Length: 306
Image 1 (cartoon, rainbow, N blue to C red):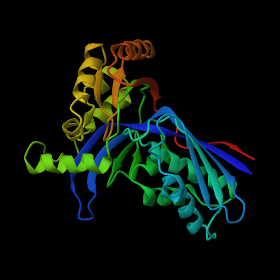
Image 2 (image 1 turned 90 degrees about the vertical axis):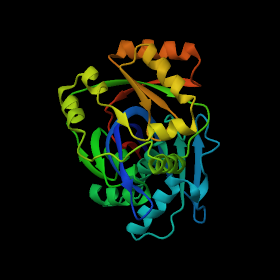
Image 3 (image 1 turned 90 degrees about the horizontal axis):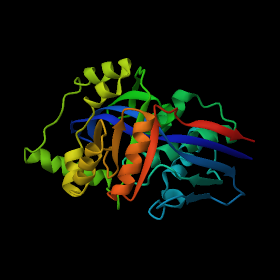
């Protein structure tokens, strides 16, 4: 028996850092936006004693953990525990289109897709709310990978409220050489905050962005995009500034580092504008690769179960 699920990457239209929590995480206020770059996860029952075999295919997957260190395997174990199952034997094959370690929640998408695919494979009665609870235990972005669309996230990002949007947004995704560790970027933000170079945001400043999303005008939306982590990412990877500047020079409505980076994303006015911008950015040679993505996209969804 096999189940296949796909789950989307994300862009943070707004990412506000509110401060450091006692547990070492940061309180944030964010507006998540799922995009059409998706990972595919295929789960198959393994033979007794097989354990959890995780294989990952796609660009630059050499840094993706294997076996039980992979978040998809941890998702399988977490779902099995909640369902009262013994240690599960399962093969998890991941085909990645979401850039690896790029600030677009590719690992979270894999975990969300694994939960949905295994619920179908094992015939579980686990509710969507229960699945979301399991997702939150795995990582801050995993619940949104289940939900998709556009949503306001608070707490660590795991407390979600869907956001109404009339917009179809076209993004150009500029892939960077190398990776940035999310904990390292947050640590850099803490250092910048201690030195007074950045300050914590307020949780109640995204009203104009939410209104722009309801109206659906990309130009209006572009004026309200923000990422508090961008100065931290730029402090660790100054070359990203040149990528952002180039995208704006070539006509993007707005550009920003995606999440903790190092991917840069650019909002275009239309599909044609995005295709042209992607071609010009690729020709400029400022990124190792360029992708066109559209949002909002649906969350983790089952495409096959047999």
